[in-house]
Image 1 (tube, rainbow over the protein chains, first blue to last red):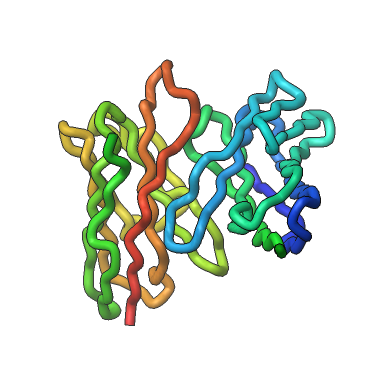
Image 2: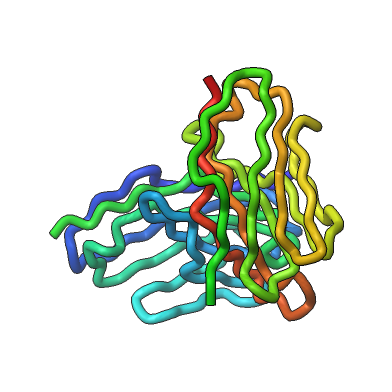
Length: 112
Length: 115
């Protein structure tokens, strides 16, 4: 079955700097790649997603890139703010959001 | 618009007991998925229900089961609890049909502790 690896497991950046989190997936049939943010005591919340027919997607300070050939995708956060501190999960799916396979998560700390 | 509601939020059980968790999806959402979150295994898919039918299933033993009612509310049950079942159980809802954008809306979870 699908396997998603996520790096790094923790990431500390200074406020205003950029943060990059990378994920690789194993199953070339996966066609949907969301990123979720989980704050303490809350459930994960979708922040951005990308489908396999697109190479890059941007939403204000957040962008995701997808390289289907290499089977990896990345989350880019620019101009980080303290409220960006949270756990970020990448995921892959063959069914547009159903049966997501998640990465292990990245703890992002933004220091002010 | 109310979000996904999970009850109870916290519960403590002993080994061998069973537990039932409840999830009320966002109004109009017909798909409900369940995920188990633990520090060691991360977020793992349990199963998904759509229109009262199990549509997808993860790799969990038969002790884990679920169902969905006609109003889309869902319950999951874990029988013969083991210490390793201690986890945060997350429910997520979505439209689930061809109009589905892919986004899952998660509840805050039910934290189960097995002693």
